Image (cartoon, helix red, strand yellow):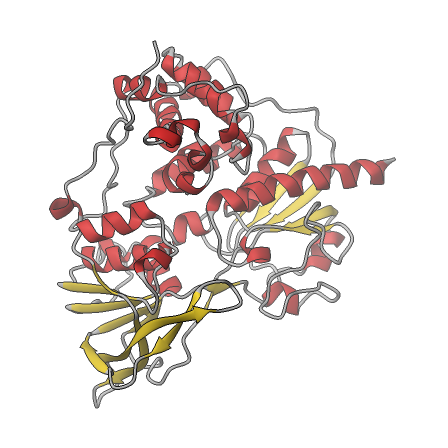
Length: 469
């Protein structure tokens, strides 16, 4: 019988005053009973708008129906038909702006908790099935043709898995010492446990995908050298790892971090477990994070967990314009993060020995809309003020690393660094070279990167099939 409650089944969470002092996962996941109860809220619509709202076209009503029937393993495999990283997507995808946004139940109450149910199915499988499962990923006969995938983030992992499933010999080249890309270096443990990422990576390895770490393509090997090694097609999924800065005085002071460096030290290099892991990171009593996206929320919440007494988000626009997920903003507020909105930094102030001591800001007001349709922030004269801080973390976006473009003749890029591709095929200006994810769009979401990886895999398969003919 359908569950017609207008509200989602509540997800258990750590209490705010407890979780802001540890790096354990905040959301604790559904029990079997909770998952079945929430699954019964799905109306199994004929036109399935949620499927169209998913960048990787997960057959959402089908897997939810299986959960409602208690067929948890079957639900997992239904998701895996199109989504190679369900435990990750269930945690970090912005479902509220994609599949859940178009859910029919959202017209009169809350949408079905699609992300929570996806996470449940994946977590249940990891905990209960594993090697005992009678089902495995379908793999086609080997084609004996090699494809190189550069980067092991969500776009690269998805592209590699889809190609391996249809028989290609796929090698992923990863610059870091651990696979996962932004999933492992950018997203904190309390939002996405690293063990979950490793489990998902292992499922992709079982398809026959080889992962080579500590391989900086553009330096260790060039694209031309990959071709000489027999790779007939190449996918570039290197993400957006080059941090942006404000260009204001004082950004070179000690105690100023890019969010990229800060989160990499905390997550990949486990600075939060120093001295067990030999990666120290200096966090003072007062921290300001500039920006209001998911990365800014992650940085602020990490700083709080690392012992900062006061952490504030500094953003020059209003709360309604913050690009972060509502869930992340809500969690940050619960954990004691302060928000200084309509506030624009103009200088980082330092001590005589070169350490941060303050952030000079000016208040803003919203004027007429600019070319993007957003109201343009305008400085209010006479409102300069100083926020006393020991650290400043700049989280205003990242762009693609220029290394591959600078070492590859003929690879066309945008002025800001994004690789130019055909939107339908992900093909670059070089024959046999494809690209997708943040390396093309700039920093975006995990699921959009996965969607690009799927599209590129289909294009590579078509390209190589035509080449064989």
